[in-house]
Image (cartoon, rainbow, N blue to C red):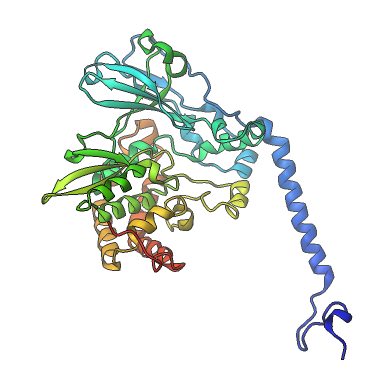
Length: 415
């Protein structure tokens, strides 16, 4: 009897039909053709996409109390462009809106620019109020250049920049209203345009006439906190104060809100933890911020292909079709804080949030945007109502995924 190595390729088992070679070749040719079409489409159209960065905004009248601005007209696109890159919220980005001009001399008793923020995509400015509080101004448009290496900015950077159109320019305003309705702490952002005035000093060129949101930075005024910490500081603080605990149900509520909003860009760096005294012990409560990716809706042929590689390229729909992509970036923190919660806690938290997100609450949250955006928000309202109704089922899927690969069985943080 000869060994298999002597006989060459093994024969198919008896009864197994041999697959014809011709159909396999045809499939390969089709795949190659599709890839060629996509490559050619990108190569032909990439220079028509917006370059990375945030353009110099149009000037606004000196001393004006409000101004009409178009946040980002560069996301306008043809039908062919939309076919490949998706519709997103392009119509909103190019819709003129009336926004209040921030009164640097009167708001919070007077605002003094301190320094630029450290965000990689959002242009942000830290300000100190005469009321003793800290504020931050954050641009609505995003800059994708700093997220890419230098060699990739000239080509792929344009594709990434165009995909800012998949973000909702009013998302942070609506998200704050929904968080208020659900009892989730937030920074209560408000729309505004920074005036181009000498008081900006060295920041005038970057921020003068820029539309964005002004919001309170989390401080001790949140929930009567005795101390604040970022996520990296939380764990040493818990080891030093062995009687302190994390309010894990509050963290679950934050994560359910993330899921409801379709906000995939959630991680420990977007949480501030507030320590409050409860019955003589310290309890740490999470305060989420930076809701730029709420309602992110990546459509079109190219994002659809990319979704097969990167699940974070999510769609915002009624069915939570891309739930897995919403769980990627918080996976470690979710394992540490949520594994120990019983199913009944998940069910009750999801049911309570769904009850709080009434039709009236959803309408009020959308009403925080400029009227020009509100007039175009019927589809958003319908999707938010549908996602609310499916939130308890989505929470059960979330918990099932958390426990699916054995991470919870290997041990979780129980602080």
